[in-house]
Image (cartoon, rainbow, N blue to C red; front, top):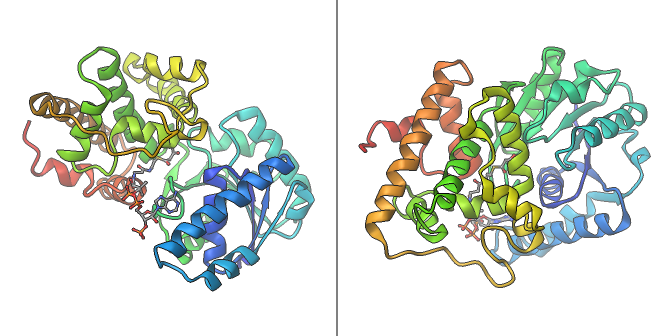
Length: 349
Ligand code: CAA
C-alpha cells in the first residue's frame, strides 16, 4: 500500500495540524471543510503554525512555501476521489461523523482507507455507516498535532490487519510514534488524561484550591508542561466533555461524569481557547499560572497524582493497554517528562 495523496475533513486547529503533518512529510494533501469561511480559517491555522516554525528557525520560508504548495483546499468531497487515505477531524458528533463517512464511502476510490481522528466516539459505530468497514480505522493525533509525536491507530473488530499495519507504518514514516489500540472508550491516553483533568475540575468546584493553585501545582511539582485547567482549555471543553461522557457510559462511575464547571462554562459559550475563554480568558497572552500557596500546591499535587497513578494501574490491570504504551502515550502525546509507571517508581505520597 502506498500513500501519496491524503485527504483531511475538518480544518479546525486539529484538522489543520494534521494537514501540516502530512504536507511537511512531503505528501500531497487535500483539506476540505463545510464552508468557504471554514476553509479560510483552516488556511489561516496552517499559515500561523508555519510562520511560528519559520520565526523559530525550525524551517525556512522556502520550506514553508513548499509545504503550503502541497495543500489543495476546498469545500467539495469529490476532491477526495483519488485519495489513498482520508482522515476525518470533524466535531465529536456521531451523526455528523457517520454522515461524513457515508459520503466519503461514496466518493473515495474503492481501495481508499478512511480514518477518524475521533477523541471519544466508537470507531466501530462510525465504520458502520460505510460499505467498507474493513478499511476504516481510527488515527488519533494529539494537540498540537505538529508537536506531539504520539498517534493512536485504532482498530475495530472489522478493520483488516493489513490496513491497520499500513496506517501504523504511515504514521511512523511521517515522524510519529504510533501505538495500535482496540476500540475502547477513551482509547489509551484520553481515558487516563481526561479522568485526571476531570478530577482537577472537581477540586476547583469543591473549593479545595483556586485554578492558579491547581495548575501551578502540576506544572511546578509534577513538571507537567501545562496545568490541568489550562490543558482543558487547549483541548476544548466540549471535546473534553464528550470524552468524559464516553468514559462514564462505560464505567458508570459518578467520578467520571463531567464536573459541573465544565458543563456550566460550555453552557455560557466558553469552550476554551477556541472561543477565547474557558477556565481562563485568552483575549490577552496567557501566562503560566502562579500561586504562592506552597502547602496547598503540595496537597493538590499529591491528591491528583495519587488518583492519576491509580487509574494508570487499573488500566494496565484490566488489559486496557501495556505499561509501555501508557507511558509512551503520556510522554509523546501530552509532553509529560515521564510516564505514570516511571513516576510510580519514585512517587511517595
Ligand atoms: N502548533 C505548532 N507548533 C506549536 C504549537 C502549535 N499550536 N504550540 C507550540 N508549538 C511548538 C513550538 O513551536 C515549540 O517548538 P520548538 O520547541 O521546536 O521550538 C514547542 O511547540 C514548544 O512551544 P512553546 O515554547 O511556545 O510553548 P511551550 O513550551 O509552553 O509548549 C505545548 C506548548 C507544546 C502546547 C506544551 O505546553 C505541551 O506539550 N502541553 C501539553 C499538551 C497536551 O497534553 N496535549 C494533548 C492533549 S489531549 C489531545 O489532544 C487528544 C484529545 O483527543 C483530546
